[in-house]
Each structure stands twice: as structure tokens, then as C-alpha cells.
Image (cartoon, rainbow, N blue to C red; front, top):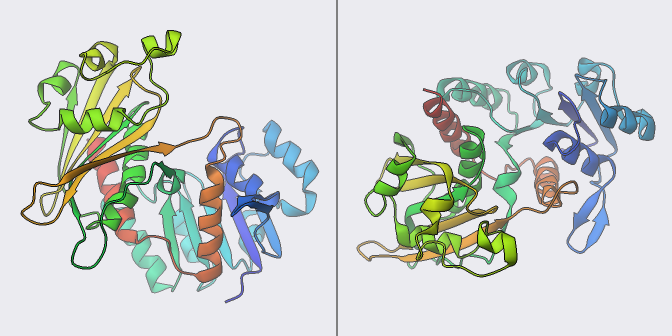
Length: 342
């Protein structure tokens, strides 16, 4: 199906928000493959629940024909929809035409069962459906060259990701960032157990519930080390010198155990580094495995150029009707969100 009209539904267009980043790229354009351009859709229609913000008023003046005052008018005859709202997804799936592709930014539902219901309804109506965030499309610096060829592919047995921020959003962003790596090497299995460690309990669990060696490998990829490095540029062995425990403010870890034996650790270490960092242990069956690590690159505010990668993924999804990743990941994400709030 040729995609002519794309509707973007948002709650607001606050500066720096995912809504603003995505709307601007569809209206103005973005960098891709060495050139700047706009997605080749005939009509982009934006509807914002709030019309009072400074950014939304500016964009309305700049693109008066691209904004609609009515939600129903915005989605009428739409061939594809970007949904960036906190509520109303279930109703949207019922309202759009059969076959209309829908990309949801963020969580589909607060529980696993609700997410399954929404995805099942989309499938019943033949609606190409995908959900995720910009975290799923971040560039790896450097690429992790984990073997993937037939017969030599390495399965990930353990993964660790370092992040910062407030619970549970920091953990959900970290899961979304780690999920593509897991998908490529064995998939994202069903969650069996989630444990939370806080304060000194995080460090007491080292080399029992998570690996110091993997943490050191992940932290080695930072270019935003805090502490003395931030003060005067000196290089430091953060793990080897025992500085991680001293620098971290209110550390916490989520130990997630999956069906099939996979274990991932989300470590929220404020004041240690300012990056999103990953380490995984991967290997063929019966072999001990090799540790691979990388940084997930996020550019600075306000441009946040990493959103251009997501905009390209959404545009390709609409043009092909083929989701960039499966809905199993979306269901597991909803299950994790549900477990974190218990």
C-alpha cells in the first residue's frame, strides 16, 4: 500500500521531548545516509492534545496546514499513525482503517495482559504494529562483533547495562536499549524473575548475581566519566581502584532472569558515568563465552541527533509495513514494567 497520509498524535510538544524530536523530523526533515531530507509522504498531519505550549504554537505558525484541531480529523484516511500519548491507544486501534500501520512511542500498556490484548486486536484488524523508543535505535560505539553466522553464532548468556536516572523510567529505557542486542543473539525470552538490589546490597552481590569483570568492560567504553575525570581530565581505573562504590549515589540494580537461563542486570549508577553502556557475555554452547562491550551513543540536547535514526526506522516501517522488530519484545517490556511497579 502506498503511504500518502501520516498522522502524528501527541500530548504536547515540549522542548526536547520525543514528541518534538519526531514531529520536527517528519515536518522539516533529518540527516540520513549522508544527506538531509524529509520522508516522502504526501501529507503529514499533527494533532496535539495541548495547544498551549510555546513549541506547538511556533510549529503551528510555521506549518499551519500540517496541524489539525481534531483527533478524528487527523486520523481520517491516514495510511500510518505515530502515537506518542499516555492514553487512547486501545481506542485508536479500533478507529483507524484496516491495514493502517501504527508506531507507538513508549509503552503499549502497563501490564503484560493489556499489552497482549492490544497487540492481538491490531493483528485481528491486520494493522502493522510496532512499539519502542529511541533507545532501540542508538548507534553502538564501537560495534560489538558478536558472531552471528550459521553454525558459529554466539548466544548471549549474560548481559549488563549501566544507566542513570529515576525509577522505573531509567530501567525501562535500559531494557529498550539492550533488547535489540538480545534479539539478534537468541531473542528476548519471557521474564521469570526480577530482583531489586539497593545501596550496599548492589556491591555485595558482585560476582554472585552480576559480574565485576563485565561492569569494568562496560565502564571502559565511557567518554563521560564523572568524579576526578570530570574535574581535571585525569584517567582513572574506576573499578580497579574501588571508586565505583564511592562515586555512585543511591545505586540500584535490577537482576532479571529469563526463561532458558539468560540473566541481565540493569545497574543504575548516578554520578559514576554519564553514558549508556553495555557488556554481554556470549559464546557457543558449552564454551565459557567472550565479553563484548560498547557505548550506546546519545547526542546532546537540544538537537538529539540520535532521534534521526529512529525517524528513519519509523519511515521505513510505514513504507514497507514490515515492523523493524517483533511484538514479543513489546510484551516482555510491559511485563517488566508491571514487575517493577509491584
